[in-house]
Image 1 (cartoon, helix red, strand yellow):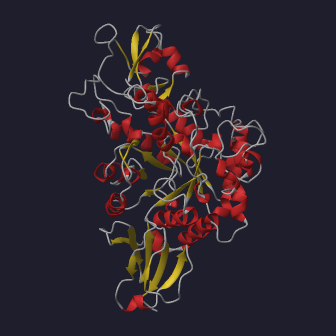
Image 2 (tube, one colour):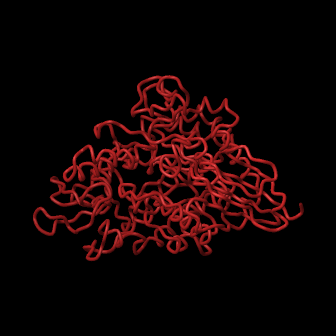
Image 3 (cartoon, rainbow, N blue to C red):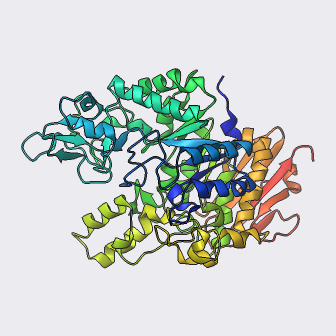
Length: 551
């Protein structure tokens, strides 16, 4: 039996470059993390997921790795990493690393050696001749470029990259590559790491021969390698030969994942993964990607939540991470910042699963609008801008970039109203959101009714609630365009969670029946009348009620 301690914890994601600068060079680092561990413990965090800490040329800010068994000098070294792990464990905080093995940086030693056709590393990657001079080997698209192939003058052949041209896809069919992955897993587990978040893990098995995608729409080629032919075989190999020997867990990240596909990774006597991140609930205001915006549709969000709650025994819960704009700016309201922030917290923290809180989410950090495309760092944003600006004027393209870019989630964490938001004593590596003077940790620490303290209270409650841990999920009012209402029930106790996603007033009544005659109000973001069972909601209102059968 594998340990299931991850089901009893709330995880906090750290994108290290923007979390906290501890050595005064303007870049977040492990020294800063070490100094904030007590803060994370006070939040109720039981685990940290680190976005990549490894050496990287930062074409995609750490997701292009040049050395899997070291720490990027910007963040420190292995000694400070060991101190962070040791201190975190003293505080009963688990450590999860980002495992990025679909691709390496083109500056990784393996790739540099693979450019020699006679090198044993040649087979670590996908090298192919073009169909014709100047034409790539197949018609696949890249997520971060326009084509998935780049030509290497030295080799005289093309190499495959599903993402940035500096993120070169590994050939997982090569047993030597899988051996390298197992060595990397053991390295970090032996240092005390407690698990891995596996980046785009369902893309690592490519179809034999890398054929053209004759029928693909959207990202051409993706249907051929998403959950590819040997994916379960390879994940089982990693689990059986390495992971099963440690008290650890693994959570997968997978574009276009459905509940049916997810069950193939999570069910059975020896599942490939312990949890799976879903993207579907992040498509309530877009089509597949934030760069294809649509009006926010609460019913679409609710359908995604309920589908995953009903289908999976356990879910990975999140509303923000390093790949998405800030959720208050998307699904909430910057006008009703505090109210919508609390509503969004209640909306997902009481669902069935393991919650992940992204850095700054607990104080309601919001999107940033920078004045020029030159101010942005996100390679995906730059791709979309320069593709679109060929057809439209810059003043029409830039607003879409400002709203959709991943850079919205990557501004420095706002610790105080001091210079640089208390993130660093030096000029930060990236722009600080100008609202840091009013939205920051220090100010919210002093306010018992702050969003930060609401997160603390919710996390503390869910950590001690058997109903949240074990209870059934049931959605109420599924067709309502503005209210998300659900219950969690276990051993005679029922929680009712009400969330309004609008500033418009909505009439709501608690369910009929004797039990609901005297509900206990546990959480609310507005003052409420005692014993109220029917009411009109205020902007972005949330309430959490509890009833017990023995009352």
